[in-house]
Image 1 (cartoon, rainbow, N blue to C red):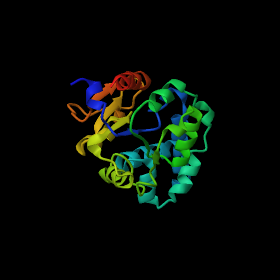
Image 2 (cartoon, one colour; image 1 turned 180 degrees about the horizontal axis):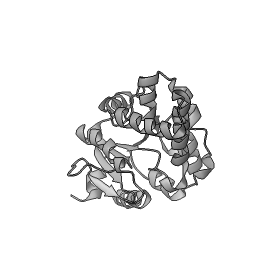
Image 3 (tube, rainbow, N blue to C red; image 1 turned 120 degrees about the horizontal axis):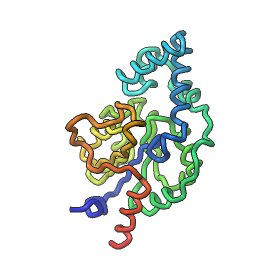
Length: 231
């Protein structure tokens, strides 16, 4: 069975947001990461260098910097999100081709992000296709439990009433696709250049939870929707 045949009857299309719907090279997430480090520095009273080390530990042990700060330092998550998303969204450029490819997909389209819905809406507005998505499921919707914790995926399924066997999930962080695969979703990993991709975004050795590996989301979606139109 080819790719088009295996995907043509899917009812739910689940997209990660950052570094998935726009390239990491635009610098937006780099700015967000820098502000995360500053926030950690303020909370812990440490230097930027020490805060960066702590930030990496929080991420490693809890899945996201935010979750780590909530568990270890009892911070208000909304204070964190407001601070780290105070960035220049002008770095995100319109992408009409990608918007048209998403529009052409059959089924329900969902943003699934460890960030906030406010951040997601600003990014999607800049990209020019906010209206193409039926739902934005953010980290607060997941009761502050981030990907790749299985509980987050279970909450997504319950709130949106989606069938994982009829769902496709698209991500730039490969390990976030493992729980999706475990519950029956078809998984798509957007492979970045190895020289640009942090090691924690790559699949583990001999992993089998990625169904499709792509390097150009727009071209891949266009290839699917061209086939869908003929069906």
